[in-house]
Amino acid sequence: MKYTVQIPKTVALLVTAALLIFFPNSCRRDLLDPVPINTLADATAFATPDRFLSNLNGLYAQLKSGQFYGGRFLVYNDVRGEEFLNETGNGVTALQTWNHSVFESSSEVINLWTAAYQTINSCNIYIDRADRNRSVVGNDALVDQYIAEARFLRALCYHSLARMYCPPYIDAINNPERNKYGLPLRLRPEIGPGNNDLARSTVTQVYNQILEDLNAAEPKLAANHGTALLNVTRAHRNTAIALKARVYMGMQRYSDALTELNKIVPAAPPFRAPSGVPHELQANIRNVFAPPYTTSESIFSMPFTSNNLPGTQNGLGSYYNPGPRGIGDYSLNPKGIIGDSVAFPGNDARRQFVLIHTNNKPYLNKFPTGPEHLDYAPVLRYAEMLLHVAEAEARVNGINARALAALNAVRLRSNPSAAPYTSASFASVDAFIDAVLKERRVEFLGEGHRAFDIQRLLLPFPAKGPVGSVAPNVSEYIWPIPSTERTANKLIIPNP
Image (cartoon, rainbow, N blue to C red; front, side, top):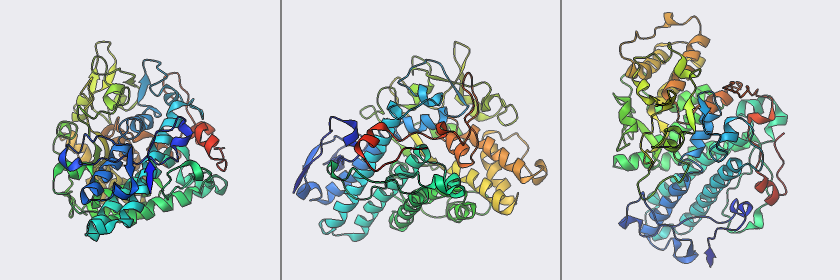
């Protein structure tokens, strides 16, 4: 059999077309700069062990599309919150997302959905073909590892889609009528439009599938890929654990989150992952965002080189850097977290990421390279795991020593002169959790976490500049299903 991977003329067909991009001979070229081939015979796609790996590299390349984890997904999840102000009025660079006015035919709504489902379908094809042809490799454990990486990537894609297009998990649990607005769960290879019609699964079914993929992947993934570059750019065991912890936090299943976090975060300082890749905080946060971008704090990131960039108006630096390094679409909101002198004091090392431009407006300088945007896009960091520990411990066990130590580890890393928090620092558990959430706003500014925190807790999106707040019970709180999907898939229902 021979199948042809083509880019159809309509965006709707992209959702279900077979879009696995193969990268032959990647063992003989930089894995970060793959050269795609769009047509390959099914009989030869997995004909050699090298092609198993090169095809797997193709999955990672799709994930880091500029429309997805290469930039825009992170940008969308930050500018929906209150930390950024739009400066250019450019409709191409997330203006509708920023002011909560997207509709089903908006380019960001369509393009993100398309990029995510392209990657999902490529993962489905890879899982199927790798399993069928495992005798070629002659090493079942290695094939299982490759398949586990594909399942991790599929889980990440579905979790990302659920965050944008579905009611938050806790909303679906508390309101059964909302539960029916999940995603079409596409779990088998599609090489044509014949199976376009697929009803939405429930929100709980989508999350169950995400967890099933991650639980299946974890024991099969490599404990350590052997190099700092591969440990940051390919999934390993701790990567799956870290994503599971994030998923459980989003589900408000805090005890389950702690079960995962306990695998990679010790009970007491010093905090260093006890097995697999030895993740730990960097002494200087600047090192996390500087070349080579492969510190032990970075659990998973999207890499770029001069030959493989996120694309025009996609990279993080393009949005946040003022000219000439970027377009400067978004300045920092003086009334956001940078205006909180208690949570974000002037002597905090993270203030180095706040640049006052010649126009006297503050901009985010965390991704400073440009106009060729080579900064890696961060997806999972060990600092996130520590703040998850602090929050989950407090919610399950109260303000205990571990919760305090985890919060202090992140806070004092950048502000060592501050007095450490103690239990006496907080009047209540809620006050402690509020401090954790503010610390997340400081630590992950520009990394795509803000909308996740707002929605997992069913908080309103705060007002900013001329844009009003958005309550959890209004349609703008989540994105609509794209018009292209509704045209191609006759069984899908729109969001309420």
